[in-house]
Image (cartoon, rainbow, N blue to C red):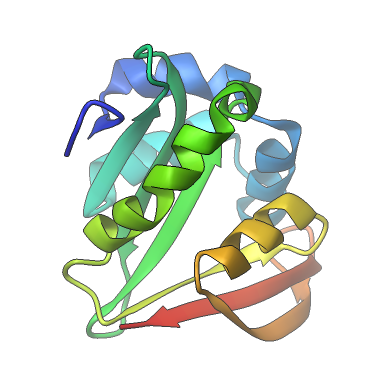
Length: 153
């Protein structure tokens, strides 16, 4: 796509997974009951698009992507990052909406679930134009509160 968003490799996942933000690790475990490395490998091999988010100096700061869903024209969008993303917050925010449009190119609807404990993700998702449609009090393996969110083209 450009120098700040590049196709993800297994090496990118091996670098990012052990450096993920605590909130991302908690969310992954709560929803899926798996370690992030396993989930990210699955996302790369089974997702439609997986991108590595890079800082202006080329460092790897996160991953994002979209996976197919059982519903026509709907994709499960996701994003995870290291704490290094905070050092490049403005570059990240400037590119976020363009990256989302790229991920959404083949979908009419994007959706997913976010851990209710993760206030930073919730704030960012609202800024990105997602609508929160439901609060599931017992979601995922750990049966924790999660919000369901959507964005329709």
